[in-house]
Length: 297
Image 1 (cartoon, rainbow, N blue to C red):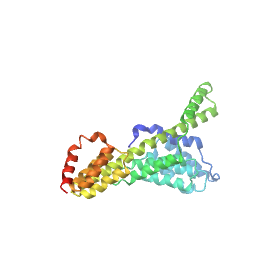
Image 2 (spheres, one colour; image 1 turned 90 degrees about the horizontal axis):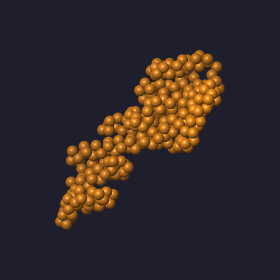
Image 3 (cartoon, rainbow, N blue to C red; image 1 turned 120 degrees about the vertical axis):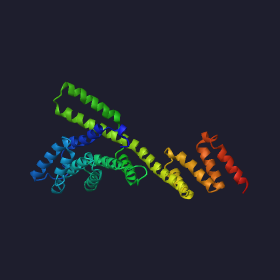
Image 4 (cartoon, rainbow, N blue to C red; image 1 turned 30 degrees about the horizontal axis):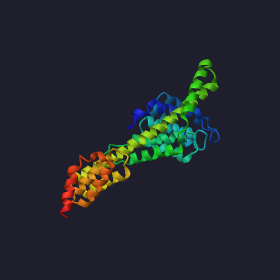
């Protein structure tokens, strides 16, 4: 996982569990008359809470059909998606989160589903040399999450947590204090998800730049210098915020020299030195080489 150090598994569980605690049954539709569905969901929830995620998924799979148009429909879909995710069935989890978001966009579970959908794609990110479609999707979904749910005042929420924590010390059995304390902690966990998304996106973009840079290197080995130059241009144009941008500029100069494109090489070198003036000394021999060849044209 790319940014585990920024977002612990316990924080992830707090965020998702906080949604379940805060909303319980979504009540977005009339309550189902089929008590069998409610009983089966309650059993599946207990299985999930015991961390038997594969078992919970097996119990919930038939319920996603029998609970349609009922108050439990989104509860069941969300818990099923969570069960898939925590049993490392990320493709199935992503499909289930997506279905919930498409079918019930106003569900209380929509926010958590959007974040977890991005997390699914992040978990599916392959080695940098392989196809990076999941990486693109993870960036897209994290970005959408940040757009849909912008940052709120974290200091107020932290204050609420401290207030209700102290109140519970005085009156630990007060149900209102318990509920408000749980909701405040869940809200704070949501702030952590935004921070996580903000840190995940640059790391994912770094991986995309590394992928393109590795392709350029392969073209260099095959002496396909024009193709390598196209890869370097892609990094310069689309991933200028990554550590590979500087390497791409240097690589572009190198392939232009190999192609004897002296005028283009000089222009690119000038741009490179404007962006990285500390490289004047290191690039002196390259500049001299380009100047000598330009003088013979």
